Image (cartoon, rainbow, N blue to C red; front, side, top):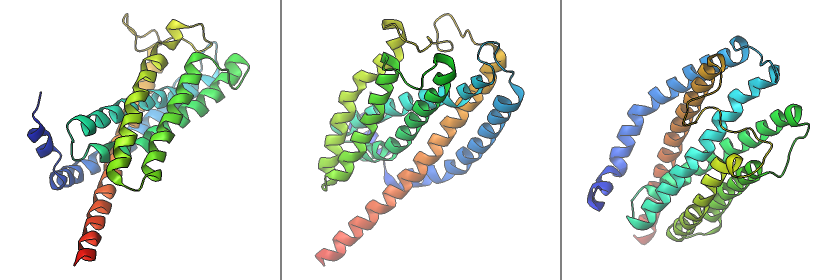
Length: 245
């Protein structure tokens, strides 16, 4: 396990600014290419499903968004743990920058899931375990962001938000395994399975491209938000210094 000193060196703001500046053009370019190709294959090349028809195309937007909603919250929780345990200098900043992106992915997953569910289930919404737990995840994101806005002291805000994020981790396995633990309308996993994917390759390829595009988009926006937050912190520190002179 790396020492606290090593973690602090990795979180040096100047080093982060240089590294993120070098990475940003590549992640932005990857986002455009992956999403462009992924959408082309998803909407124009992939065949209609023999049961779901053209509505299956919602899957290419819905499923990667759901994956990213969970992944970003896991990152948020890891950053929160790092902030509380190791006092990682940029952990709070990472969580604060990631939360709105994760909330957006969760909202996309909820909205597209509703659009997909109506023709499949005959209803826009049901209070089953999977849908309800994802809605709770969305509220956890909103709660985390609200604590940052409601508490003026950044240290107290970061600590309160981090504690909420860690409490909310219990919801992640509920979302993942809800279709196995309870009887729900939501279909069981067809890709992330121990015995391998059950989805046809004509759908799997575009779906994975879209997932990679979403990931590249997340990294791009996270870098932009972190750089902006670093600049805002430097400006606040400069103003505080000016006020004391």
